[in-house]
Amino acid sequence: MKSSKSSTVLVAVAWITILAITLPKIILQEIFHFPVSENLQYQIAFPVLLAGLVLVFVVKTLRPLRLFFGLFLVLVGAQWLVYTRLDQLPIYQRWLQDPSFHIYMLAEQSLHLVVTLAIIVFLWIVKKNFMAFFLAKGDISAPVEPVRWLGVKAGERWGKFGWILAICISLGTLAFLIIAGRPPMAFVVKALPFLPAVLLAAALNAFNEELTYKASFLSVLEDAVGRQQALLLVAAFFGLLHFYGVPYGIVGVILAAFLGWILGKSMLETRGLFWAWFIHFLQDVLIFAFLAIGSITPGG
Image (cartoon, rainbow, N blue to C red; front, side, top):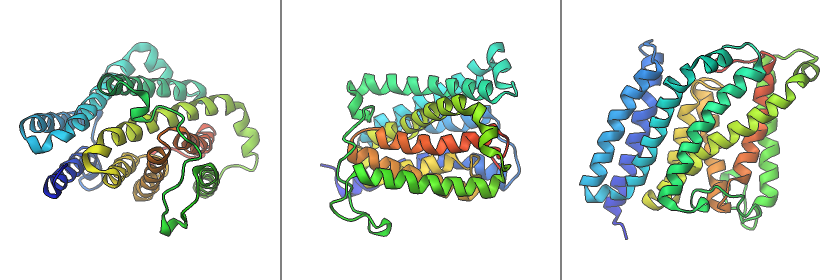
């Protein structure tokens, strides 16, 4: 059993690592107006993660974080390979620069899927069980742990709460998109031709992000730092990664962090990916539909 002091150290190291990976780009670009390229991001991330990996093998107290640093290195390494090498192939360059939503969005999602598959392979090797990293439907009617500030009381179950959450978050997302995007009156008619690509891209993106940035990290952090800290770390990580997403900036970070927290909570309580994927999928359908008709763009 870990002592209180060692638990505090583990939590502190995990937080420092998350912030050291995500904040430099935001600080350099927003405060110093210094553009951060993909290569520079990796030049910042790799030394941090390599130093951390060395520490967790040298310092006994930090050994519970070995899988955390191993996973992070696999993630960043796969992203480096995909986003600085694979996406530079002539065929991908043609797809990614194509003005058609159908082509560039599905090409983009195929690249994300390669990263996700690398994460799945790593976690399967170290855990030997898909359910150990939430790659399962899970118990979709599992009890919901009460959350007073959300009005979630004892006795509620994900079978009902999941639908309420999906509807409420979707309505909030739709309201934001309408206010920010000011779509034309014939929005539905204009977006309809894009529906197959929107649905496929949304399904892929929801799976990629939920597995890569939430399920994977929850699976390596839950035992190391405890359920609550694992949830907070994943929420912060997911939120900060969306600073240049939709919505943009601090608002985007807060909304993505909340989504990361509540969907991570669903994984931990149902021991599966269903509700996290489904709720995320609904949001992406709305967002990608607005992207398809040009009403909104990532990063403001």
